[in-house]
Image 1: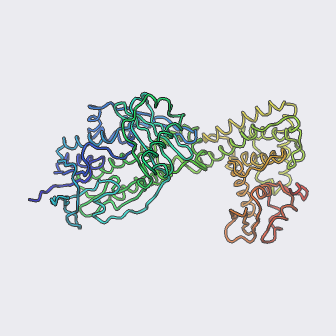
Image 2: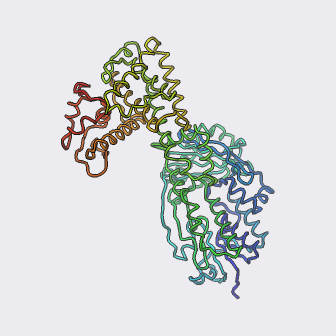
Length: 626
């Protein structure tokens, strides 16, 4: 005889057990199936944040876990290239920390709660097909048994059998750069932290689980998981010794690995969406939407989706709005998970140095993991601009402070600023930093290119910075520069001051970029095209030139270094200027003579652009070509 249920839930882990429990408590007759024996483990990041702990508490699963296991509530640390964003979470349901529970423990507890709620549970059972299609009316087991039901729910993971039998295709697929090797350890000291430490091509997660067990997971390029078992073991153990900031590798000598190494290749971590529901069926958890597990959102999302479906159907509603709700809730977090699944490079250091320095942004970043805060609220355009400026400025100040400056070098004339010596130029840099902090940066700076009177006043302002320090020992001037520039970096990263117009953010950074190149030239050092300060300065002066081109009504100008082009203006350029990147930067910052600039490779007539190529007057003898 064919049995009939109100719901068959395929997949008995986080999503499936939670949904089965909620429906059973609403009076439904529910059959919960899973192809795996129980209890059993599965690949997972394990971490659950306060929003999920609140749901587990409401479900009764947290009490079930605590009755048999010692749970460790932990604060959260995300460290990127040495910049640590760390702390607790804004409380949700009385929880302000996360916890990490192995799936063999968590899933068993959820199944026990489901069974206690009246759910019929069968483990080690494979679904071979579905009954009906419009609507779906049940499942067929591999034994041939037919089970009829009003609803069939696929909670059976990213390679969902239910989705496959429905013919539901994956869409909006994404891939990251990471693969994982992980294992469980016993004997490490108790910890109140989940530590994630990200290097340029590798990462580590160290977190205590239940009952004194630790999860140690290492991340690397796809090659990490390739090769023989012996090769993977060697890589795993070697990687554990590469993160001394968060894991004292010597402690491993007294610890015991209590599991095989779990191999998670990059191919297992590719994201997707699937259609969420249809007549008589719905997908939840990874079956419907899989995001990169680096952000540990899978368990929380699975339970929240189960809650939506269970509460809606228990109240007599339908699932017409389920997909829209799911996708709106996932918006930004899907992209965010894959953004964090890329190794740290480029502006990552700038972003995380800012996050680590800004208490408000740092807390908001932590609260993205509980979905209290959307990622776009953390990485605003204003913050990113300030953090990038701070990173570049800090890079430049460190370069200046690291220079070997004896008396002979300090007395050298700076060709780009012929009235100044190297010592004078450093005095100017200290003055710029001080004036910026005090809100007394020259407020007509952007207009000096068009008005000789303003340019003259600007020259007097900078000359005053030099003259007031003329009698100070160079050690005192450098200390001033170190102090003021360091404070300026801190303010930029915290998004506090300095007061002034919007362009003030980039002005002292661009100034430092130009003068650092001046110093290198004066000291006979090779140009630096790759540092953050040079990248920032070149971009700032390109933007400034773009504004002058627009104000003069000139056609767009293309700059090219032979490898990359920059279009300054909208539409088709009438002229292209080609030179190496150093020469382009020196040209648009007024460090090359008109004759030298004219001698570059121009695709058209440079004459209309020469008067505005730099934001300063450009006498023909300003600086001879090199």
